[in-house]
Image (cartoon, rainbow, N blue to C red; front, side):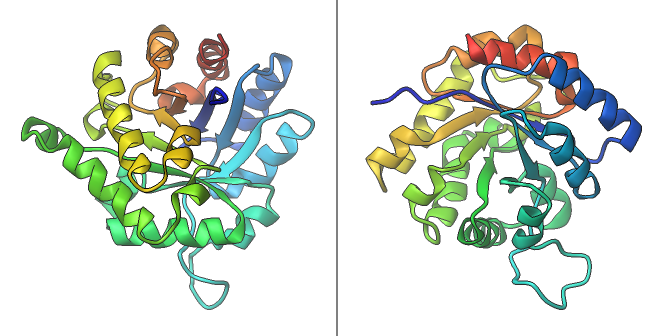
Length: 250
């Protein structure tokens, strides 16, 4: 099997301004990472970031996409629009979208199907809450989240993107799953995909997200089934994001 290349994605969430983004992009371009990187800013900054990353190997992604085709859907952003603004990737199913905006497994699956059909590379987010983990439901929750998507999108089509395991209890809390805990779930995720398509499972990059920092990135990324990270807060500081990318490049 060809080794999976590490991938590190920056999720800026609802942060940024044109001046701040310019400074971030300048710092990034001054020391571009040796691993594959994707930057996912808010929609309104997609073109600024795409222009700022032009000529680098880094990709650009959206933070969500509509499951609807172009048309009369006020406030929605279509997959074609993301592509038109220079995005090749899109984050889907982030726990903040699931918990605060009612994105069920079925809605997330429809969004992934729409994104893939349009030619976007999805970063599918899955993960359990603290209550679910304490109830011993981690594996059941992530399996259900994966299965909902695989019922609509073949595993081979997902392999062009990535799946990000983000335990909800570790997002923005400062708490992080231990490398062993994260690896256990990543291995189970790969096994779940393998039940549908073993070659696709071997090729799919599994990212860890949840308070990843320069200090813990290398140990997390050294696990056999962790192929990089989806980085939230630490991605807002270019030096920290580049340090995490450096950990992935080793």
